[in-house]
Amino acid sequence: MRPPPIPGVRRPGLLAALVLALLTAVLVPTPHAAAADPLLSQGRPVTASSAESAAFPASAAVDGDPGTRWSSAFSDPQWLQVDLGAAASISQVRLSWEAAHAAEFEVRASADGTSWTTLHATAGGTGGDQTLNVSGGGRYVRVHGIRRATPWGYSLWEFQVFGTMSGPGDERLLSYGKPGVASTSQNDADCWECTPARAFDLDPASRWATSSTTGWTDPGWIYVDLGATARISRVVLQWEAAHARAYQIQVSPDAAAWTTVYGTATGTGLKQTLEVTGTGRYVRVYGTQRATPYGYSLWEFQVYGTGGAPTPPPAPPKDPADPPSLVWRDEFDGPAGARPDAAGWRADPGTGPNNELEYYTDHANAAMDGQGHLVMEARKQATPGSTCPRDPLTGSTTCQYTSARMNTGTRFHFTYGRVEARIKVPRGNGLWPAFWMMGADFLTGRPWPYNGEIDIMEVLGKDVKTSYSTVHAPAYHGGGGIGAPYTLPDGTGFSDDFHVWAAHWDSRGIVYTLDGRTVLTLSKEEVERTRGPWVFDHPFYIILNLAVGGDWPGPPDASTPFPSRMLVDYVRVYQ
Image (cartoon, rainbow, N blue to C red):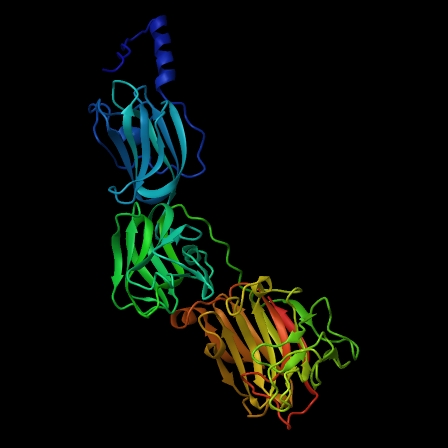
Protein backbone atom coordinates (compact mmCIF):
# COMPACT_ATOMS: atom_id res chain seq x y z
CA MET A 1 0.00 0.00 0.00
CA ARG A 2 0.99 3.63 -0.42
CA PRO A 3 1.94 6.06 2.33
CA PRO A 4 -1.35 7.48 3.75
CA PRO A 5 -2.60 10.53 1.89
CA ILE A 6 -2.44 13.96 3.52
CA PRO A 7 -5.94 14.65 4.88
CA GLY A 8 -7.65 17.39 2.90
CA VAL A 9 -8.86 20.09 5.33
CA ARG A 10 -10.35 23.46 4.66
CA ARG A 11 -8.05 25.25 7.16
CA PRO A 12 -4.96 23.08 7.94
CA GLY A 13 -3.29 23.61 11.24
CA LEU A 14 0.33 24.58 11.56
CA LEU A 15 1.56 20.96 11.91
CA ALA A 16 -0.48 19.73 8.94
CA ALA A 17 0.75 22.58 6.80
CA LEU A 18 4.34 21.81 7.72
CA VAL A 19 3.93 18.10 6.88
CA LEU A 20 2.27 19.01 3.58
CA ALA A 21 5.16 21.31 2.66
CA LEU A 22 7.77 18.70 3.50
CA LEU A 23 6.06 15.92 1.58
CA THR A 24 5.49 18.16 -1.41
CA ALA A 25 9.19 19.06 -1.45
CA VAL A 26 10.08 15.33 -1.45
CA LEU A 27 7.43 13.96 -3.77
CA VAL A 28 6.97 16.69 -6.39
CA PRO A 29 9.98 17.06 -8.71
CA THR A 30 12.00 20.22 -9.00
CA PRO A 31 12.12 21.52 -12.60
CA HIS A 32 15.28 20.59 -14.54
CA ALA A 33 17.61 22.90 -16.39
CA ALA A 34 16.81 23.23 -20.07
CA ALA A 35 18.17 20.57 -22.45
CA ALA A 36 20.10 21.38 -25.59
CA ASP A 37 17.69 19.35 -27.77
CA PRO A 38 13.89 19.75 -27.93
CA LEU A 39 11.50 17.90 -25.64
CA LEU A 40 9.84 15.26 -27.83
CA SER A 41 7.67 13.25 -25.46
CA GLN A 42 5.25 15.74 -23.92
CA GLY A 43 1.65 15.00 -24.87
CA ARG A 44 2.60 12.04 -27.06
CA PRO A 45 0.66 8.74 -26.97
CA VAL A 46 1.87 6.55 -24.12
CA THR A 47 1.20 3.00 -22.97
CA ALA A 48 2.18 1.00 -19.91
CA SER A 49 2.30 -2.57 -18.74
CA SER A 50 -0.24 -1.66 -16.02
CA ALA A 51 -1.69 1.19 -13.94
CA GLU A 52 -2.42 1.05 -10.25
CA SER A 53 -5.77 2.73 -10.85
CA ALA A 54 -7.51 5.22 -13.13
CA ALA A 55 -6.16 7.98 -10.89
CA PHE A 56 -2.56 7.22 -12.02
CA PRO A 57 -2.72 6.74 -15.83
CA ALA A 58 0.29 6.36 -18.11
CA SER A 59 -0.53 9.71 -19.78
CA ALA A 60 0.15 11.54 -16.49
CA ALA A 61 3.90 10.92 -16.92
CA VAL A 62 4.08 12.92 -20.18
CA ASP A 63 1.54 15.67 -19.51
CA GLY A 64 4.06 18.26 -18.34
CA ASP A 65 2.36 18.54 -14.93
CA PRO A 66 4.84 17.67 -12.12
CA GLY A 67 1.94 17.10 -9.74
CA THR A 68 0.42 14.16 -11.63
CA ARG A 69 1.96 10.73 -11.98
CA TRP A 70 1.79 7.23 -13.42
CA SER A 71 1.88 4.30 -11.02
CA SER A 72 2.09 0.62 -11.91
CA ALA A 73 0.86 -2.58 -10.33
CA PHE A 74 2.91 -3.91 -7.41
CA SER A 75 4.99 -6.51 -9.28
CA ASP A 76 8.07 -6.94 -11.51
CA PRO A 77 8.68 -6.25 -14.33
CA GLN A 78 6.69 -3.17 -15.37
CA TRP A 79 7.19 -0.63 -18.13
CA LEU A 80 6.06 2.68 -19.57
CA GLN A 81 6.67 3.69 -23.17
CA VAL A 82 6.02 6.75 -25.31
CA ASP A 83 5.43 6.93 -29.06
CA LEU A 84 7.31 9.95 -30.45
CA GLY A 85 5.38 9.72 -33.73
CA ALA A 86 8.44 9.23 -35.95
CA ALA A 87 12.04 8.11 -35.67
CA ALA A 88 14.22 10.40 -33.59
CA SER A 89 17.82 10.73 -32.52
CA ILE A 90 17.61 10.59 -28.72
CA SER A 91 20.14 12.51 -26.65
CA GLN A 92 18.67 12.70 -23.14
CA VAL A 93 16.03 11.07 -20.94
CA ARG A 94 14.80 12.60 -17.67
CA LEU A 95 13.00 10.62 -15.00
CA SER A 96 11.29 12.16 -11.95
CA TRP A 97 10.51 9.24 -9.65
CA GLU A 98 7.93 9.19 -6.90
CA ALA A 99 9.01 7.40 -3.70
CA ALA A 100 8.09 4.10 -5.39
CA HIS A 101 11.06 3.99 -7.75
CA ALA A 102 13.13 1.40 -9.57
CA ALA A 103 16.24 -0.11 -8.04
CA GLU A 104 17.05 -1.75 -11.39
CA PHE A 105 15.79 -0.53 -14.72
CA GLU A 106 16.67 0.10 -18.36
CA VAL A 107 15.85 2.83 -20.85
CA ARG A 108 15.22 1.29 -24.26
CA ALA A 109 14.49 2.54 -27.78
CA SER A 110 12.79 0.86 -30.72
CA ALA A 111 11.93 1.71 -34.28
CA ASP A 112 8.83 -0.50 -34.33
CA GLY A 113 7.85 -1.10 -30.70
CA THR A 114 8.98 -4.73 -30.98
CA SER A 115 12.77 -4.91 -31.24
CA TRP A 116 14.48 -2.90 -28.51
CA THR A 117 17.95 -1.45 -28.00
CA THR A 118 19.14 -0.57 -24.50
CA LEU A 119 20.27 3.06 -24.18
CA HIS A 120 20.88 3.02 -20.39
CA ALA A 121 20.90 0.35 -17.69
CA THR A 122 21.49 0.41 -13.95
CA ALA A 123 21.12 -1.96 -11.02
CA GLY A 124 21.67 0.82 -8.48
CA GLY A 125 18.76 3.17 -9.04
CA THR A 126 18.39 5.81 -6.32
CA GLY A 127 15.12 7.37 -7.43
CA GLY A 128 14.51 11.10 -7.35
CA ASP A 129 15.32 13.18 -10.38
CA GLN A 130 17.61 11.52 -12.91
CA THR A 131 19.04 13.05 -16.11
CA LEU A 132 20.45 10.39 -18.42
CA ASN A 133 22.56 11.41 -21.40
CA VAL A 134 22.14 8.71 -24.01
CA SER A 135 22.85 8.07 -27.67
CA GLY A 136 20.51 6.16 -29.93
CA GLY A 137 17.52 6.33 -32.15
CA GLY A 138 13.96 5.12 -32.39
CA ARG A 139 10.31 6.05 -32.53
CA TYR A 140 9.44 4.42 -29.21
CA VAL A 141 11.23 4.99 -25.89
CA ARG A 142 10.57 2.81 -22.85
CA VAL A 143 11.43 2.81 -19.16
CA HIS A 144 11.60 -0.85 -18.28
CA GLY A 145 11.54 -1.58 -14.54
CA ILE A 146 13.24 -4.85 -13.60
CA ARG A 147 13.37 -4.65 -9.79
CA ARG A 148 11.39 -2.37 -7.44
CA ALA A 149 13.04 -0.44 -4.63
CA THR A 150 9.90 -0.56 -2.43
CA PRO A 151 7.08 -3.00 -1.77
CA TRP A 152 4.89 -0.89 -4.06
CA GLY A 153 5.09 -0.61 -7.84
CA TYR A 154 6.84 1.92 -10.07
CA SER A 155 5.73 5.54 -10.14
CA LEU A 156 6.90 8.49 -12.29
CA TRP A 157 5.89 12.10 -11.96
CA GLU A 158 7.52 12.87 -15.30
CA PHE A 159 9.09 10.87 -18.15
CA GLN A 160 10.79 13.24 -20.62
CA VAL A 161 12.62 12.35 -23.84
CA PHE A 162 14.82 14.91 -25.59
CA GLY A 163 16.38 14.75 -29.05
CA THR A 164 15.75 15.60 -32.69
CA MET A 165 13.11 14.21 -34.97
CA SER A 166 14.24 12.33 -38.05
CA GLY A 167 12.05 13.02 -41.04
CA PRO A 168 12.79 12.01 -44.66
CA GLY A 169 15.08 14.99 -45.06
CA ASP A 170 17.12 13.95 -42.02
CA GLU A 171 18.54 10.81 -43.61
CA ARG A 172 22.29 10.68 -43.17
CA LEU A 173 25.26 8.38 -43.55
CA LEU A 174 25.33 6.02 -40.58
CA SER A 175 28.13 3.60 -41.49
CA TYR A 176 31.17 5.86 -41.80
CA GLY A 177 34.01 4.74 -39.56
CA LYS A 178 31.92 2.02 -37.93
CA PRO A 179 33.37 -1.43 -37.15
CA GLY A 180 32.82 -4.16 -39.70
CA VAL A 181 32.96 -7.93 -39.59
CA ALA A 182 33.27 -10.25 -42.60
CA SER A 183 33.28 -13.94 -43.39
CA THR A 184 36.95 -13.60 -44.47
CA SER A 185 39.25 -10.83 -45.65
CA GLN A 186 42.37 -10.51 -47.77
CA ASN A 187 45.72 -8.94 -46.90
CA ASP A 188 48.53 -9.84 -49.28
CA ALA A 189 50.48 -8.47 -52.23
CA ASP A 190 47.39 -8.63 -54.47
CA CYS A 191 45.06 -6.86 -52.05
CA TRP A 192 46.85 -5.05 -49.23
CA GLU A 193 44.76 -4.44 -46.09
CA CYS A 194 41.51 -5.38 -47.83
CA THR A 195 39.84 -5.63 -44.43
CA PRO A 196 36.18 -4.93 -43.54
CA ALA A 197 36.99 -1.43 -42.26
CA ARG A 198 38.03 -0.39 -45.79
CA ALA A 199 34.42 -0.64 -46.97
CA PHE A 200 33.32 1.99 -44.43
CA ASP A 201 36.14 4.57 -44.69
CA LEU A 202 34.66 6.72 -47.50
CA ASP A 203 37.88 6.12 -49.44
CA PRO A 204 36.80 4.92 -52.89
CA ALA A 205 40.28 3.58 -53.65
CA SER A 206 40.38 1.13 -50.72
CA ARG A 207 38.27 -1.99 -50.48
CA TRP A 208 37.28 -5.10 -48.61
CA ALA A 209 37.76 -8.47 -50.29
CA THR A 210 37.20 -12.05 -49.20
CA SER A 211 40.37 -14.06 -48.66
CA SER A 212 42.10 -15.53 -51.71
CA THR A 213 43.07 -18.61 -49.70
CA THR A 214 39.85 -19.40 -47.84
CA GLY A 215 37.14 -17.01 -48.98
CA TRP A 216 36.53 -17.56 -52.69
CA THR A 217 33.46 -19.62 -51.88
CA ASP A 218 29.74 -19.09 -51.31
CA PRO A 219 28.35 -17.67 -49.16
CA GLY A 220 30.45 -14.60 -48.32
CA TRP A 221 29.34 -11.67 -46.20
CA ILE A 222 30.23 -8.41 -44.50
CA TYR A 223 28.27 -6.46 -41.89
CA VAL A 224 28.58 -3.13 -40.11
CA ASP A 225 27.72 -2.23 -36.52
CA LEU A 226 25.91 1.16 -36.57
CA GLY A 227 26.37 1.55 -32.81
CA ALA A 228 22.64 1.75 -32.01
CA THR A 229 19.32 0.84 -33.54
CA ALA A 230 18.61 2.70 -36.76
CA ARG A 231 15.91 2.94 -39.36
CA ILE A 232 17.58 2.04 -42.66
CA SER A 233 16.34 3.76 -45.81
CA ARG A 234 19.16 3.37 -48.33
CA VAL A 235 22.21 1.20 -48.98
CA VAL A 236 24.86 2.12 -51.54
CA LEU A 237 27.25 -0.56 -52.80
CA GLN A 238 30.25 0.10 -55.05
CA TRP A 239 31.37 -3.34 -56.17
CA GLU A 240 34.83 -4.23 -57.39
CA ALA A 241 34.98 -6.59 -60.38
CA ALA A 242 34.52 -9.51 -57.98
CA HIS A 243 30.85 -8.84 -57.26
CA ALA A 244 27.77 -10.80 -56.26
CA ARG A 245 25.26 -12.11 -58.75
CA ALA A 246 22.91 -13.16 -55.93
CA TYR A 247 22.91 -11.43 -52.58
CA GLN A 248 20.71 -10.04 -49.82
CA ILE A 249 20.71 -6.94 -47.65
CA GLN A 250 19.86 -7.96 -44.10
CA VAL A 251 19.33 -6.17 -40.78
CA SER A 252 19.61 -7.43 -37.24
CA PRO A 253 19.28 -6.14 -33.66
CA ASP A 254 22.05 -8.43 -32.38
CA ALA A 255 24.14 -9.71 -35.35
CA ALA A 256 22.56 -13.14 -34.79
CA ALA A 257 18.96 -13.05 -36.03
CA TRP A 258 18.84 -11.49 -39.52
CA THR A 259 15.90 -10.11 -41.49
CA THR A 260 16.17 -9.68 -45.26
CA VAL A 261 15.11 -6.26 -46.55
CA TYR A 262 16.38 -6.65 -50.13
CA GLY A 263 17.38 -9.52 -52.37
CA THR A 264 18.40 -10.13 -55.98
CA ALA A 265 19.64 -13.01 -58.12
CA THR A 266 20.70 -10.75 -61.00
CA GLY A 267 23.29 -8.44 -59.47
CA THR A 268 25.22 -6.44 -62.05
CA GLY A 269 28.02 -5.13 -59.85
CA LEU A 270 29.46 -1.61 -60.12
CA LYS A 271 27.47 1.00 -58.18
CA GLN A 272 24.06 0.07 -56.83
CA THR A 273 21.81 2.38 -54.83
CA LEU A 274 19.13 0.37 -53.06
CA GLU A 275 16.07 1.93 -51.42
CA VAL A 276 15.19 -0.32 -48.49
CA THR A 277 13.10 -0.25 -45.33
CA GLY A 278 14.38 -1.94 -42.23
CA THR A 279 15.31 -1.51 -38.60
CA GLY A 280 18.37 -2.79 -36.81
CA ARG A 281 21.75 -2.03 -35.37
CA TYR A 282 23.62 -4.28 -37.80
CA VAL A 283 23.38 -4.27 -41.61
CA ARG A 284 24.79 -7.06 -43.73
CA VAL A 285 25.53 -7.79 -47.38
CA TYR A 286 25.11 -11.55 -47.70
CA GLY A 287 26.39 -12.96 -50.99
CA THR A 288 25.12 -16.36 -52.07
CA GLN A 289 26.40 -16.55 -55.66
CA ARG A 290 29.59 -15.02 -57.05
CA ALA A 291 29.62 -13.47 -60.50
CA THR A 292 33.30 -14.33 -61.07
CA PRO A 293 35.63 -17.18 -60.09
CA TYR A 294 37.01 -14.88 -57.40
CA GLY A 295 35.37 -13.88 -54.14
CA TYR A 296 33.36 -10.82 -53.08
CA SER A 297 34.84 -7.34 -52.98
CA LEU A 298 33.40 -3.91 -52.16
CA TRP A 299 35.05 -0.53 -52.58
CA GLU A 300 32.24 1.06 -50.57
CA PHE A 301 29.35 -0.19 -48.41
CA GLN A 302 27.33 2.81 -47.24
CA VAL A 303 24.24 2.70 -45.03
CA TYR A 304 21.90 5.70 -44.79
CA GLY A 305 18.94 6.32 -42.52
CA THR A 306 18.03 7.78 -39.15
CA GLY A 307 19.00 6.85 -35.63
CA GLY A 308 22.10 4.78 -35.02
CA ALA A 309 25.14 6.44 -33.48
CA PRO A 310 26.69 8.05 -36.56
CA THR A 311 30.23 9.39 -36.70
CA PRO A 312 30.25 12.63 -38.71
CA PRO A 313 32.18 12.05 -41.94
CA PRO A 314 34.82 14.54 -43.12
CA ALA A 315 33.39 17.56 -44.87
CA PRO A 316 33.66 17.15 -48.65
CA PRO A 317 35.80 19.65 -50.54
CA LYS A 318 34.01 22.76 -51.71
CA ASP A 319 33.32 23.39 -55.37
CA PRO A 320 35.10 26.43 -56.81
CA ALA A 321 33.30 29.74 -56.94
CA ASP A 322 31.61 30.88 -60.12
CA PRO A 323 33.40 32.69 -61.62
CA PRO A 324 36.59 31.27 -60.10
CA SER A 325 39.58 33.35 -59.05
CA LEU A 326 43.20 32.90 -60.09
CA VAL A 327 45.00 31.23 -57.15
CA TRP A 328 48.29 30.00 -58.64
CA ARG A 329 50.26 30.75 -61.78
CA ASP A 330 53.61 30.60 -63.50
CA GLU A 331 54.04 32.81 -66.58
CA PHE A 332 57.68 31.75 -67.16
CA ASP A 333 58.80 35.33 -67.65
CA GLY A 334 62.35 34.82 -66.36
CA PRO A 335 65.50 35.71 -68.29
CA ALA A 336 66.87 33.36 -70.93
CA GLY A 337 68.58 30.37 -69.30
CA ALA A 338 66.86 30.79 -65.90
CA ARG A 339 65.70 27.53 -64.35
CA PRO A 340 62.09 26.92 -63.24
CA ASP A 341 61.10 28.77 -60.07
CA ALA A 342 62.04 26.52 -57.13
CA ALA A 343 59.19 28.02 -55.08
CA GLY A 344 56.70 26.53 -57.53
CA TRP A 345 58.41 23.56 -59.14
CA ARG A 346 60.74 20.75 -58.25
CA ALA A 347 62.70 18.61 -60.69
CA ASP A 348 61.83 14.93 -60.86
CA PRO A 349 65.11 13.31 -61.96
CA GLY A 350 65.57 9.67 -62.87
CA THR A 351 64.34 7.21 -65.42
CA GLY A 352 60.72 7.31 -66.49
CA PRO A 353 58.02 4.62 -66.19
CA ASN A 354 56.22 2.87 -69.06
CA ASN A 355 59.50 1.53 -70.55
CA GLU A 356 60.55 5.07 -71.50
CA LEU A 357 64.07 5.56 -72.85
CA GLU A 358 65.02 8.96 -71.39
CA TYR A 359 66.76 10.03 -68.22
CA TYR A 360 65.13 13.07 -66.60
CA THR A 361 67.77 15.52 -65.40
CA ASP A 362 67.72 17.85 -62.43
CA HIS A 363 66.42 20.86 -64.43
CA ALA A 364 69.39 20.72 -66.83
CA ASN A 365 66.86 20.23 -69.65
CA ALA A 366 64.39 22.94 -68.55
CA ALA A 367 64.94 26.72 -68.79
CA MET A 368 63.30 30.00 -69.79
CA ASP A 369 63.84 31.29 -73.30
CA GLY A 370 63.60 34.95 -72.34
CA GLN A 371 60.44 35.35 -74.43
CA GLY A 372 57.94 34.22 -71.79
CA HIS A 373 58.22 30.48 -72.35
CA LEU A 374 59.57 27.47 -70.49
CA VAL A 375 61.58 25.20 -72.79
CA MET A 376 61.58 21.49 -71.95
CA GLU A 377 64.17 19.89 -74.18
CA ALA A 378 64.72 16.26 -75.16
CA ARG A 379 68.28 15.51 -76.28
CA LYS A 380 70.11 12.57 -77.75
CA GLN A 381 72.58 12.34 -74.89
CA ALA A 382 73.76 9.25 -73.04
CA THR A 383 73.71 9.25 -69.23
CA PRO A 384 76.57 7.12 -67.85
CA GLY A 385 75.56 4.84 -65.01
CA SER A 386 71.86 4.97 -65.84
CA THR A 387 69.74 1.99 -66.85
CA CYS A 388 66.87 2.12 -69.36
CA PRO A 389 65.10 -0.50 -71.48
CA ARG A 390 67.17 -1.67 -74.44
CA ASP A 391 67.32 0.99 -77.16
CA PRO A 392 66.23 -0.61 -80.48
CA LEU A 393 68.56 1.71 -82.43
CA THR A 394 71.77 1.12 -80.46
CA GLY A 395 71.02 -2.01 -78.43
CA SER A 396 72.29 -0.17 -75.34
CA THR A 397 70.57 -0.35 -71.96
CA THR A 398 72.27 2.86 -70.85
CA CYS A 399 69.81 5.76 -71.22
CA GLN A 400 70.60 7.38 -74.57
CA TYR A 401 68.35 10.42 -74.16
CA THR A 402 67.84 13.13 -71.57
CA SER A 403 64.73 15.22 -71.04
CA ALA A 404 62.77 17.23 -68.47
CA ARG A 405 60.08 16.36 -65.96
CA MET A 406 58.94 18.65 -63.14
CA ASN A 407 56.03 18.93 -60.74
CA THR A 408 54.47 21.03 -57.99
CA GLY A 409 54.37 18.03 -55.63
CA THR A 410 55.85 19.57 -52.48
CA ARG A 411 54.97 23.14 -53.45
CA PHE A 412 51.32 23.33 -54.46
CA HIS A 413 48.33 20.97 -54.17
CA PHE A 414 44.70 21.78 -54.82
CA THR A 415 41.27 20.18 -54.98
CA TYR A 416 38.84 21.32 -57.69
CA GLY A 417 39.09 24.30 -59.95
CA ARG A 418 40.21 25.04 -63.49
CA VAL A 419 43.79 24.19 -64.33
CA GLU A 420 45.12 25.19 -67.75
CA ALA A 421 48.34 25.51 -69.69
CA ARG A 422 49.26 27.03 -73.06
CA ILE A 423 51.65 24.63 -74.76
CA LYS A 424 53.30 23.97 -78.11
CA VAL A 425 54.29 20.33 -78.56
CA PRO A 426 57.12 18.87 -80.68
CA ARG A 427 56.79 16.55 -83.66
CA GLY A 428 58.78 13.31 -84.04
CA ASN A 429 58.50 9.57 -83.63
CA GLY A 430 58.92 8.47 -80.02
CA LEU A 431 58.22 11.88 -78.46
CA TRP A 432 55.53 12.03 -75.79
CA PRO A 433 54.75 15.46 -74.25
CA ALA A 434 52.26 15.58 -71.37
CA PHE A 435 50.50 17.99 -69.00
CA TRP A 436 48.84 16.05 -66.17
CA MET A 437 48.10 15.71 -62.44
CA MET A 438 48.76 13.07 -59.81
CA GLY A 439 46.92 12.48 -56.53
CA ALA A 440 48.97 14.07 -53.74
CA ASP A 441 48.81 10.93 -51.59
CA PHE A 442 51.25 9.39 -54.07
CA LEU A 443 53.90 11.46 -52.27
CA THR A 444 53.13 9.77 -48.97
CA GLY A 445 53.35 6.23 -50.27
CA ARG A 446 50.02 5.37 -51.84
CA PRO A 447 50.84 3.55 -55.07
CA TRP A 448 49.54 4.34 -58.52
CA PRO A 449 46.73 4.05 -59.61
CA TYR A 450 45.09 4.11 -56.16
CA ASN A 451 45.99 7.80 -55.77
CA GLY A 452 44.32 8.70 -59.10
CA GLU A 453 45.76 10.34 -62.24
CA ILE A 454 44.21 13.12 -64.33
CA ASP A 455 45.82 13.47 -67.78
CA ILE A 456 44.93 16.84 -69.29
CA MET A 457 47.06 16.63 -72.43
CA GLU A 458 49.03 13.84 -74.05
CA VAL A 459 50.17 14.01 -77.67
CA LEU A 460 52.25 11.40 -79.49
CA GLY A 461 54.93 12.93 -81.69
CA LYS A 462 54.17 10.42 -84.44
CA ASP A 463 50.59 11.78 -84.72
CA VAL A 464 50.53 15.43 -83.70
CA LYS A 465 47.00 15.87 -85.08
CA THR A 466 45.52 13.92 -82.14
CA SER A 467 45.46 14.80 -78.45
CA TYR A 468 44.20 12.69 -75.55
CA SER A 469 42.63 13.43 -72.15
CA THR A 470 42.22 10.54 -69.70
CA VAL A 471 41.71 9.57 -66.07
CA HIS A 472 43.20 6.54 -64.31
CA ALA A 473 41.97 4.84 -61.12
CA PRO A 474 42.17 1.37 -59.53
CA ALA A 475 39.23 0.06 -61.55
CA TYR A 476 40.33 1.65 -64.86
CA HIS A 477 43.94 2.40 -65.68
CA GLY A 478 46.63 1.97 -68.29
CA GLY A 479 44.97 0.96 -71.55
CA GLY A 480 41.68 0.78 -69.66
CA GLY A 481 41.72 4.42 -68.56
CA ILE A 482 38.65 6.53 -69.31
CA GLY A 483 39.18 9.21 -71.93
CA ALA A 484 39.00 10.09 -75.60
CA PRO A 485 41.09 11.40 -78.49
CA TYR A 486 40.24 14.66 -80.26
CA THR A 487 41.57 16.85 -83.07
CA LEU A 488 41.64 20.48 -84.08
CA PRO A 489 38.65 21.75 -86.09
CA ASP A 490 40.81 22.69 -89.08
CA GLY A 491 42.72 19.40 -89.07
CA THR A 492 46.11 20.98 -88.40
CA GLY A 493 48.72 19.56 -86.06
CA PHE A 494 49.20 20.56 -82.43
CA SER A 495 52.90 21.13 -83.14
CA ASP A 496 52.12 24.03 -85.50
CA ASP A 497 51.19 26.53 -82.76
CA PHE A 498 50.37 27.04 -79.08
CA HIS A 499 47.07 25.68 -77.73
CA VAL A 500 45.34 25.96 -74.35
CA TRP A 501 44.45 22.69 -72.66
CA ALA A 502 42.29 22.91 -69.53
CA ALA A 503 40.48 20.69 -67.03
CA HIS A 504 37.41 22.12 -65.27
CA TRP A 505 37.19 19.90 -62.18
CA ASP A 506 34.55 19.83 -59.43
CA SER A 507 32.42 17.45 -57.38
CA ARG A 508 30.37 16.48 -60.43
CA GLY A 509 33.27 15.43 -62.62
CA ILE A 510 35.78 16.86 -65.10
CA VAL A 511 35.18 18.83 -68.30
CA TYR A 512 38.18 19.03 -70.63
CA THR A 513 38.51 21.93 -73.05
CA LEU A 514 40.89 22.79 -75.86
CA ASP A 515 41.17 26.49 -76.72
CA GLY A 516 37.89 26.99 -74.84
CA ARG A 517 36.04 24.25 -76.79
CA THR A 518 34.73 21.26 -74.81
CA VAL A 519 36.35 18.07 -76.04
CA LEU A 520 35.44 15.58 -73.29
CA THR A 521 33.07 15.48 -70.31
CA LEU A 522 33.49 12.89 -67.56
CA SER A 523 30.54 12.61 -65.16
CA LYS A 524 31.35 11.22 -61.72
CA GLU A 525 27.90 9.64 -61.49
CA GLU A 526 28.23 7.92 -64.85
CA VAL A 527 31.75 6.67 -64.19
CA GLU A 528 30.71 5.16 -60.85
CA ARG A 529 27.69 3.56 -62.48
CA THR A 530 29.51 2.13 -65.50
CA ARG A 531 33.24 1.77 -64.75
CA GLY A 532 34.04 1.93 -61.04
CA PRO A 533 34.93 4.28 -58.17
CA TRP A 534 35.67 7.94 -58.78
CA VAL A 535 38.88 8.67 -56.86
CA PHE A 536 39.41 12.34 -57.74
CA ASP A 537 37.84 14.24 -54.81
CA HIS A 538 41.09 15.02 -53.01
CA PRO A 539 44.26 17.11 -53.53
CA PHE A 540 46.32 16.76 -56.72
CA TYR A 541 49.54 18.30 -57.98
CA ILE A 542 50.65 19.34 -61.49
CA ILE A 543 53.23 17.62 -63.71
CA LEU A 544 54.87 18.68 -67.00
CA ASN A 545 57.16 16.32 -68.90
CA LEU A 546 58.52 15.38 -72.30
CA ALA A 547 59.09 11.63 -72.52
CA VAL A 548 61.14 9.80 -75.14
CA GLY A 549 59.98 6.33 -76.10
CA GLY A 550 57.74 4.08 -74.06
CA ASP A 551 55.06 1.47 -74.56
CA TRP A 552 52.55 3.84 -76.12
CA PRO A 553 54.54 6.13 -78.48
CA GLY A 554 57.17 3.55 -79.40
CA PRO A 555 60.85 4.41 -79.77
CA PRO A 556 62.38 7.31 -81.69
CA ASP A 557 64.04 6.57 -85.01
CA ALA A 558 66.47 8.20 -87.38
CA SER A 559 63.84 10.74 -88.42
CA THR A 560 63.24 12.03 -84.89
CA PRO A 561 64.73 15.52 -84.48
CA PHE A 562 67.04 16.12 -81.54
CA PRO A 563 66.99 18.33 -79.65
CA SER A 564 63.17 18.53 -79.56
CA ARG A 565 61.39 21.16 -77.52
CA MET A 566 58.10 21.40 -75.69
CA LEU A 567 57.26 25.08 -75.06
CA VAL A 568 55.03 26.13 -72.14
CA ASP A 569 53.71 29.70 -72.19
CA TYR A 570 51.98 29.51 -68.80
CA VAL A 571 50.28 27.30 -66.22
CA ARG A 572 47.34 28.73 -64.24
CA VAL A 573 44.95 27.44 -61.58
CA TYR A 574 41.59 29.06 -60.80
CA GLN A 575 39.40 28.25 -57.80
